[in-house]
Image 1: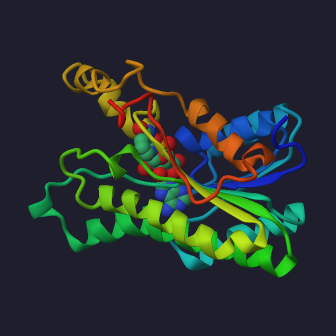
Image 2 (image 1 turned 120 degrees about the horizontal axis):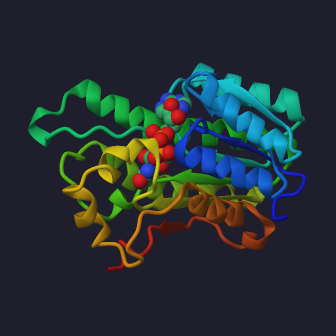
Length: 251
Ligand code: NAD
């Protein structure tokens, strides 16, 4: 088990990639703090799944684009588990709006949820680790759209490309404290966020044709890479951004 004895916080873990990461982490021996906007039947399912693997878990509802909720998340995690070893910044939203129609609010909603949240959660987490002299690992979830243009994403794509720079720059400042920071850029992953793509007979074949492996990925396939990056096996890996995309960006 790669993550035996570790505690991980996963944001946006009520469904999709975050859920996949939380479940793989539990399989690899980690206890998990499940964050999402609300505590509901989805987060209960994740909680039950993790507990059925013999691991401990709690749900902490909160909006990670809000500073007060971020601090409350880590206060709750530290209070329940005594410390946290791994943070996965996964929560994100995507909207599709033509550039000339994009509003300030749409820009701010996407940027705050996708980018500001990763900065704030990383800062809160790293400050606590540094104060306690603990090592740790941060994994930021970006997107294939850091490197590929899809229509109507002039707000989403920059928020995801910026996560690469965020990752490199935080890693440079916290490496001396034994904290590693890496980024995963998922490709087309089968989650509720992109169900409309998976269910479209017009769009899906066009997208899949661009993917070397010829299929969408699964949340657990992102989870297993996240588990590697969080583990001691990746102890000399930091500041990196890795595409988990079935060979989309490389084709
Ligand atoms: P999803 O919509 O299925 O799940 C995202 C979860 O995050 C939801 O449960 C949602 O409630 C939660 N969330 C949203 N805003 C939040 C906030 N402010 N605070 C706390 N939780 C919040 O999406 P997904 O496909 O699982 O995507 C997960 C991450 O992966 C996102 O950052 C997304 O941009 C990225 N991504 C997804 C794909 C894909 O193909 N699915 C591809 C590239 C990148």
